Each structure stands twice: as C-alpha cells, then as structure tokens.
Length: 421
Ligand SMILES: Nc1ncnc2c1ncn2[C@@H]1O[C@H](COP(=O)(O)OP(=O)(O)OP(=O)(O)O)[C@@H](O)[C@H]1O
Image 1 (cartoon, rainbow, N blue to C red):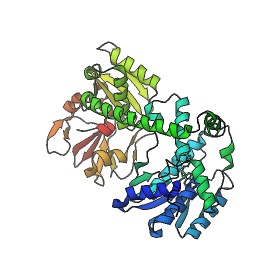
Image 2 (cartoon, rainbow, N blue to C red):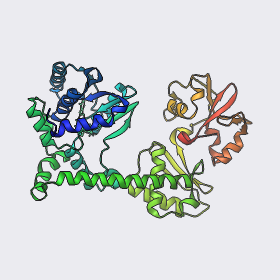
Image 3 (spheres, helix red, strand yellow):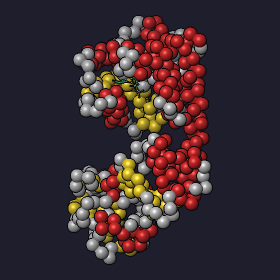
C-alpha cells in the first residue's frame, strides 16, 4: 500500500477517527470513479463482513440496468455484499432534485442503527457547490461546506474523500486498474454544475492553480460562521419563545439580521420550508411594525403565521378542520385523513404524545365543558383556559381537533410540533 497516496490516506485517517465505535459501512455505489475508488480503498482496509454496497437505480436512463450489473460484478470481485434498489422518479419538473430525494430516502430506509452511510463526495464537488450557491446569492448556510460527518436516519453519513481531489481519485483508479462507468449527462453543460466544472473551473485554474482547495477552505470558513450564527439564533429563540410563539417585545430588542435568524430557526424547528430572504423581510415588516391592535396573518405552504396578543404564532394548515367532527376512532399508528385538507399526522402524535400511540383514541371537535389533561401530569385545565392561554381566537375554537382517550381530552391538535397542553 502506498502510504502517501491521497485516497488510501484519507480512508486510513477516517477509519482511525471512527475506530472506537467499530461501525459497519453501507457504501453508496453509483459506479462512477468516486464511489468505485471509495469502495476499493475501504475494502483494502476494512474486513469484508463490515461492508456492503448499494446502488440506487433511478430508472431514468436505459443504461441504468447495465450500471447495476457493472456494480454487481465489481462487488462480486471484491467479495462485498451488494444490492440494487430501484426507485421511481419523474413526477416533478426538477428531475435531479427528485432523484436525489428518492435516493436518500431509499438509503435512509436501508441504514441500520450504528451503521455509516459512506458516499464519494470529494474536494471538486465541494468547490463546485460553493460557486453554485454563490451565484444563487446564498448566505453562510448555503455556502457552508458539506460536513465530513453528520447524523443520518438511524446512523450517520460520512464523506471520507472531501479533501481528496478528483484528479487524485482518477489516478487511484488508474493505479489499481479499476473500471468505472461514465454518465454521459455529466458532459452536458446545459446543467449548471457541469458548466462550472467544464468551463468555469479550468479558466479559474489558469490564474489560480489551487483554486479548488481555496474554495473548499472558504466553504469550511462559512460553516464555522454558520455554526456561530446558529448558536446565537438558538439563544435568541429561547429568549423570544413563549411556549406559544415568538414574543414581539423580545423580537423588537434584536437587530433586523438577528430577527431574521430567529425566524429561520423557528421555521427549521417547525420542519417548515424555509422562506426566502425577501419573504422573511416582508413577514417581519408586517408582523412587527403594524398597529399594535391589528391581527395580521401571513399564509405559507404548511400553515400561517398570526399575530395575536403580542405573540407571533404558527398555525399549521392541518390544525383546524372545516367543520365540527363528532368523533373518529384512531389508534395513532397511521395518519388519520379527516378531509381533503385535514390530516392528523402520526408523526406528530409519536413526537408529542408517544404514550398515546396504539391506544383507542377518538378525534373530535369540542362539545363544551371539556378539560385538558396537562402533559406528563394528572392535573387538568379547562379547554376554555387552554384556548385563551394559547391565543386561539374564539372564532376558531370550534374547529380545533381534540385527541380524546377514555373520555378525557389528552391532547389538542393545534400547535403542531410545539404543541403542549
Ligand atoms: N445512483 C446512486 N446509487 C448509489 N449511490 C449514489 C448514486 N448516485 C450518487 N451516489 C453517491 O453519492 C455520491 C455523490 O454523487 P453525486 O455527486 O452524483 O451526487 P449529487 O447528485 O450531486 O447529490 P448529493 O451531492 O446531494 O449527494 C457518489 O459518490 C455516490 O457515493
């Protein structure tokens, strides 16, 4: 083994960092040079029973079946367990994003606890991503480097080759006589990443030969900055969050930039699609600077933000039903579809009230005089007080869904992930 060879050296360093946890590896094998070199180098240094490889067949090109065969043969030759998982894509206009989403979903489903998903992302990917994000006008978060390790599904996702250049990967394949497949679409400069790779980067390298390393370092610096911004947003959020939403008084103590970060943090916490900078600015302008007795409301794809009694509250779309509901049986094991627009989410119950999953529940609207059991307690409060505390306007109270067990209201399906009677 050549000890100064960059691919093998990166794998050695990565394994040394993870030696204490003794993980097993699920290698995402596309058949391209990056993941082929990755698989080969890992197999040289890790026992075979600790590795397995998977190819996700997006079924978008006829040759994808041949790539599956190619990967199978490579794994047979290396003695590594292999499987192909077909996924169906092609419903949306953004095929590339849809394929990526389907790929990571399939990989998440396969990954076992304590297992590491390993992908072949490398330094050139990092540099190209930074430029792509820069041209989209991204801030520190978008410009941040891909992490070499992150939590993923029940295990983790590692990218051991992030500091290795594409040239070094190709050299590794040549040295070890490794074949790989080449996706013809990678040459098509209609795609912006390919335009950067084939047209922009070579030009930049003429003037700055080390430009890829420099860009990768710049994206690492952006990650550091983003981590600091995030921890500041987290403590600002904790100061502003009342349990029901964001306090206007507290928000107004912050600069505009910090207000925006708090709202971004909030949207992430709510698992909502991130609004653009422009929408964030509009939101804050409307919500913080309108007349104090006004009750402005702003619609988003998953719900709306409302200002009520000095607090900005998130009201998810699924919180309110269109009409009163007498009672639907539910065991909380699947989503409960009440109407076209209203679904009670299993994930919500699992996160907020795991103790109720599998119990015979009834989902209904209020009938009058109910009391709500406080979470993890025997104490109850009247539903009326609860609605008042949560700032739910009286005209919406008949539409709020209650989760009832043994004739007792145990949860109110209102505040989504931050709900807590
Ligand atoms: N069809 C696939 N099956 C299995 N693994 C794949 C597949 N496509 C890509 N990968 C894995 O992902 C790594 C990165 O591939 P690529 O650069 O093409 O990804 P991408 O489409 O840019 O998306 P992302 O960077 O978000 O993963 C590959 O080195 C490989 O490990």
